[in-house]
Length: 327
Image 1 (cartoon, rainbow, N blue to C red):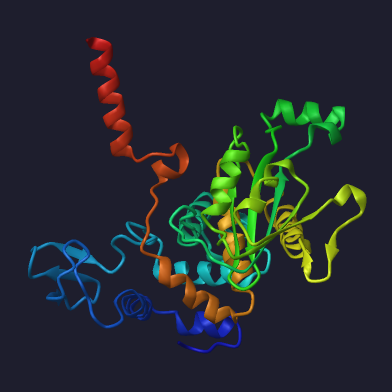
Image 2 (cartoon, helix red, strand yellow):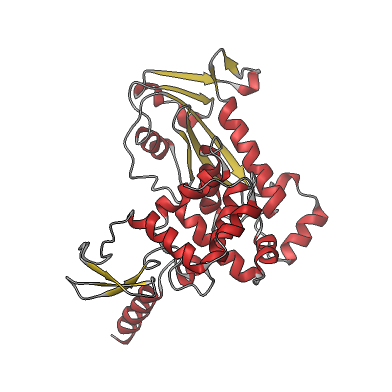
């Protein structure tokens, strides 16, 4: 891994497309190129340094195939600069600012940002319970209708504004870091208990506030410490929820400072980005940049980002719908 003192040294090093391609190849395969289709290690590399051909399945592929960079016309030099900026800033960067830095349109910068955030995505369900000290709390993002003036409400309504508050439940392990998930509207005590049991081991100490949804968690953990905030109780020695409440406060400051407001459609993606930045806050900027390349083997298309499904899936559903209508 390279060491850079600042962003100027970073862009001076990654100023050549070939250097970026070689860096991406090393980070993806660590010197042992394998076919992305059949995982065969007998792969031929073309002279251009970008294309490969598998000797087993005879298929062609590139180093960007199946990654967040796939089928992008933006050069890797710009991609690397964008990743560095997004991971080095403490409160993220808006797509408008990235567009100015890279000389691209705001629409393109926004799509790039969401592709990069795809690398920060956490599979919230594919986990095993971990013992330790857990702080759990919930936060609500969005405009509070009771606190909005009539003039602002009318202005937001005319612009098609969003008036619902979206809940996020956060789980902070004091050694492993922060994760979280958007709460569905129909979440009840059964849903919350199942979600927490998936992460929190039976020999853990759970610290929460007095929300009724946590009332039954004492049956599944070693100790459940509850703090009634309305009674002025916020902690007892090392037992408190101040850490995760501070993380929520910082997340809200990130929204206000960089994005102004976020809708519920993409809120989970922005939350995952914040968790990545929070959990890697002890690393240097280049170490955080390097860490991003461990999870770049993902791809999200514009169709999936905007409509929530791939073009093929949408066409299949439309075809099935037409057949059912004709029948």
